[in-house]
Image 1 (cartoon, helix red, strand yellow):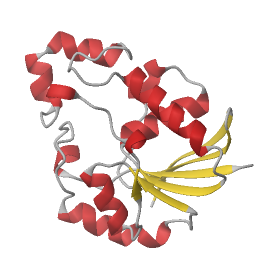
Image 2 (cartoon, rainbow, N blue to C red):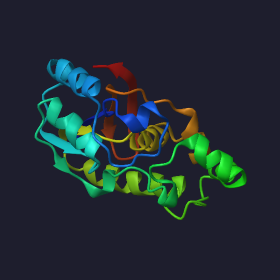
Image 3 (cartoon, rainbow, N blue to C red):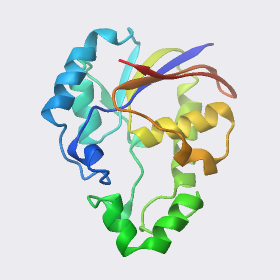
Image 4 (cartoon, helix red, strand yellow):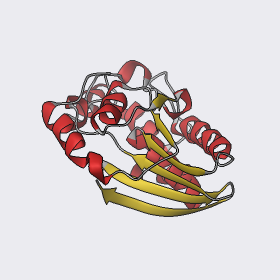
Length: 187
């Protein structure tokens, strides 16, 4: 049975604009307006899901989707770095940031490693592959990255080499073990 999964990245928020680790803040007014304007670009779906973050829930609502929160689709837990900018953390913990960006198993912030996030996303996708039909999910950019790596059978070390702009759709189609990718379609 073929599964179609449309992953939509959230609209602009202050954290995204400032290169700040997500602090749970709301979308900016411009982000909300852009999401509302993109609502007609969404495909019809059998299931509507969202990462449990405020920016994903708000994006889904602005797109007109009454999405169910899915814990497995939560963004990367960055522990004590939450709410800080990458520049702040890099200045204070240069070696830790370097290790985190270079090693998918590293979690110097006390949160979750990129490797653990990729494993969590892969487990969710394996379960979703049995659902069939089309699923629309508004998810954090790191979830998109993890699922793209899985679809391409790419190593976790390539995680940071994938850019996921706001309000873009990345589509996976196929079934467990074999996925096709259509990346970065703007809404």
